[in-house]
Structure formats: structure tokens, C-alpha cells
Length: 150
Image (cartoon, rainbow, N blue to C red; front, top):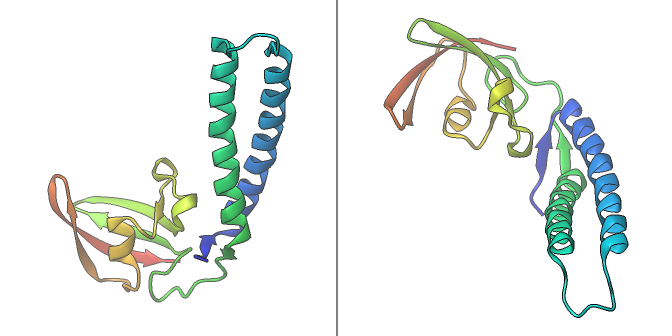
């Protein structure tokens, strides 16, 4: 089975999310039971909507359980080259940005957590401070310089 790489905080967040989703699934199941009318032959629209919502929640629960079951916690990283869990400061043109390289399930670009499977994440892995990398993007090739790894 494929390992899921997580930071310690990412593991805790998934555990918390699993707890909340399990509670939501329980509420949805109770609501379905309340509004279902077994004497009627077909489901009404509300029951169908609730079942669809519960199915989405159950799929999220399945994915999180799988991730937690196969989790490998990212430990202290080597700060001489970019690895999973590394915090990397990069420069593109005159702008600087600090990113954290994480496993795919933990990625959140809005918080500068980028997946090791993303084009930028893949290009950064194994590189050292001072190196430049080129990444193909929809706007064309972008060159990044690695300023700091921690």
C-alpha cells in the first residue's frame, strides 16, 4: 500500500477532520431516518439530497482513514537539500516566497503548503541552496532560485 507522507501537525489536523466528519455523518444518518417515510415507495427530494451529502462525507472519511492508516510522519529534514517537510524560500524575479513541501493530502497552496507531486514541488526536491530551477507553467517557463532551506 502506498505511504501517505504527513507532517505531525498535518496528521493531527486529519484526525480532527475525521472526528468532525464522523459526527456529521452520524447527524446526516439520523436526519435521513427522521425524514424518511418507509410507507412511501420512492424517496423524496430531501432524503435523496441528504443521502447524496452523506455519500460525499463517507468518501472523505474513507480517504482520511486510508491516509492515516498509511501515514508516515515526516521527521526532521536535512537542511542542505529540499526534502518533504522542508521550508524553502525561493525567489522568482524580484519577489521572494517561503513554501513548505508536504505530501499531496496536506497540500494547501493558499497557506504556501505545496505538494511534493506538484510541478514546483517535484522540481525543488533534492535541490540545494543557491540552485536555480525551471518549471513549466501555463504562462511559460518560470525560473526559481533557492535562497534558503530550513
